[in-house]
Image (tube, rainbow, N blue to C red; front, side):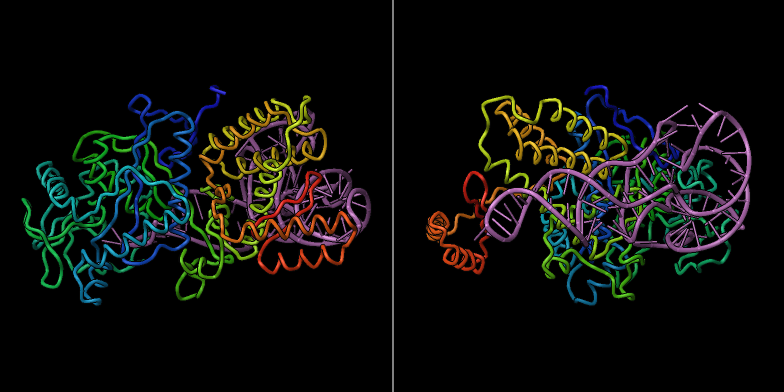
Length: 469
RNA sequence: GGCGACGUGGCCAAGUGGUAAGGCAGAGGCCUGCAAAGCCUUUAUCCGCCGGUUCGAAUCCGGCCGUCGCCUCCA
């Protein structure tokens, strides 16, 4: 299985490329994180989930991973919202940073190694501007500092945008500051009275958005690293500007791979507050949806495809997961057989291979999930037929653990040993007794009572199995 | 106008030259005292349309139609 090579579609080259890390065995990547002025919506989370699959896949393929995800805790929106709430910026963003981490946990998204806050890296940002100034890439207008795009010939290499062909006047620049060229962007905003500002080596003010990511990425990962990710909307101008800043300052290539997650639509429409189809994770959970169902749905479509988030889709995901859980439960409650069994080692190996091939193919989660469903079907058939031998069964469980380390969708071990377990077991036993005596009226009555308590009983060839429904 | 993505059965979706994975939903059946779970059978001679290349295309090329995204701070 060592022959399977990880490949990613690189926005920079617009081609799939085999992944190699700059540092032997160590993959370093930077992911644009949330602007913490609100709760994360499912579109945000889709991108964060894609990054979760990325880091888990890198680990599956043997890399040590260092992931950095920034927290943008200073921008126009955070400042305005904090002012409206009448609290400090720090206090305001703390709340949403905490909420953000809660949402990650809810969706079983693994923690990155670093979550730098923009406001903790002001000195680094100022220093980066200083370097750019010394290199002649900037100019000042008022007390603000701008990046002069004409000094960076490679500008546009990521987005392949040609600024001279861009539709003129498509959008009026609302910035109050004076720029020499409409294409230039602000690195450093002059201090204003009602805004937070910092005194730095380049003067007093606050950082521009693009600057934050360049400074934090280079501080924590170095001037060159392996992968940079984000949503497709970041390609231009954000990532283009990051490249311009970073490479002009360091003289070295910034990130080698650029991976971008497509957006998510809701019921075929762009998610927007004005359309009433805007969902935060919290809202969906309040409506009674299991976070794992949401996770499954979000990963059922590969990250570079638009995903149409629908309630029908949520139901389909729910059913698919139910099927997975049922098979795992069957496997757990069915005794092993002495003979060869009806599932062979080769079936397990085929599953492991297909899972890896799917993930290696630019994180094709749809393919990976299909591989899982295929092996699950084989398991069910075997369980109905010749059974599964101890040897194959243990290989299978190992393969499942490996798969779930990447997918993260298996039901968690139910450790909820409630106080009435004995009572329920007693009822189940009484029902079994009644069935033995063909007293089906009584056995059905007991089953109804259990159902009312939220307990589902299933009669298997190996006796009754019950669970909380 | 510039750059780009996409169009596969009722729905989601895999598939990038060799003859349509998988899931959900529907129908019939097996198993079951009845259920539940599971299994079996069944639903695309066809992959937006037209033309071309090829022994052979959903997959390559050209045109058309349609949907969508970005074009200065929205994942």
